Image (cartoon, rainbow, N blue to C red; front, side, top):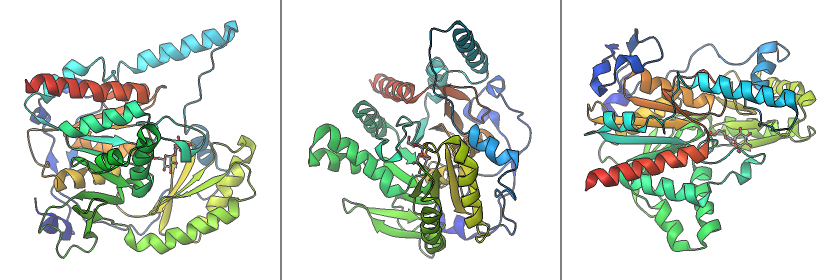
Length: 404
Ligand SMILES: O=P(O)(O)OC[C@H]1O[C@H](O[C@H]2O[C@H](CO)[C@@H](O)[C@H](O)[C@H]2O)[C@H](O)[C@@H](O)[C@@H]1O
């Protein structure tokens, strides 16, 4: 792979026809229209559009608040009340109907492994809501020790990357803290961070620490050589590095402007900022949206996206989790290979960019983690992080039994 030649080309690669048979995926497995063009998996030049998408002119417009209200599945409440039980039954029925389009990746495991036979699996995992349960305080969203073991095991057998909206350091640290919490042994922390096949991409893919592919990143301004915590040479890819001072400034302004709103929390994720409203009374959601809007109107090069009870402020660059997947596949020498099956597991709207890349490039499967029906570009579903862990463990067992 030649990162240099791909990155310096400002030209979009010619659209190539979708080749469904490349992975041997039967067309009946595609829930979405299969016509249309697809980009090659080569990396595209970053484009900063002139118009800023994503910011609404008026936060009182229903779509802004509607998006905030629908941004996370409600917690299920089981009560003895008859009407509620009927409602719960309706929810269960709707979920079952939805699963006809997004079958369980656990129930479909044999189908997945049949297609994966003879191929190398590349695994991409979102963090919040996928590897860790959604909790009220983002600072305490750790993986369980059993999940940590599952990630560790799976990364021994398959190249694995964690792609998160959080800053890369926080994701790495989250893994380390999990280790400390459950093992209290530095040696194992060291072991976890040092896993040769585990890669991290923070800030929605805008901060990637990937493998060192010697000679590929020379003359590449946004791809720098670095060393990880163990002194191993790695490549750092930070396509939004020029936005760092702006993001810091906006972070401080957002902290200041929201400080009187009870429950509001602003998180600096290095190349993006998260404004959490999970713990804000719904009557104050319009106020928090207005605060974000008031700050962003002075920053035409920043835009807003919605996550799970969070408003995400990020640079207007042509880069997202989908591009990060393409970048990492290329860095790992796994792009343009007929014998690679890519699996991406995620729960959030930002993960849809990666699902789309896999679907349109016929590269593999997106797996949506959701306990409620949601429109998605994923092929399969898992209900929650517990099922994600079962899926990861199944992959390991399958690989071990095939190695015999
Ligand atoms: O890409 P991800 O790894 O899914 O990160 C997206 C955001 O996740 C975190 O927020 C979400 O999880 C929190 C902890 O469970 C929850 O309290 C919050 O409501 C969710 O939106 C993280 O704190 C954000 O910075 C990430 O951007």
